[in-house]
Image (cartoon, rainbow, N blue to C red; front, side):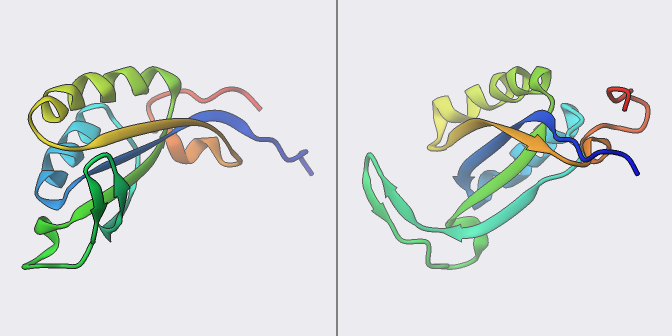
Amino acid sequence: MEKARLYPMKKVDIIVSGERLPFVRDLLARVRVTGYTIVPNVSGMGHSGFYEGNLIFNETSSLALLMTVVREEQVELILEGLTPLFERYSGIMYVSDVGVSRQDHFVHRNQETEPS
């Protein structure tokens, strides 16, 4: 049995209005992100005060949190792609270091992973 191992990756959290999610999803596809999780209807406190995440009309009228794990070289591409969005609309991106146990889940099949 092979010894358990964690592989270093970057976790990217992006908070945008629900109506901006298609833009973010398209960007992540262009950057070749292999997967993400979306949490709709988020609430929180920010520089403009408390934001209640209640659905007013539909999910596009509330904030959403998109979480993904990527290779380090993809982070800069995501930030570059989001910059025009953040210059015009509210939103934020957080990046943190994480370790993943199944590196192959975060790399496209035609990209090589680090040897075991």
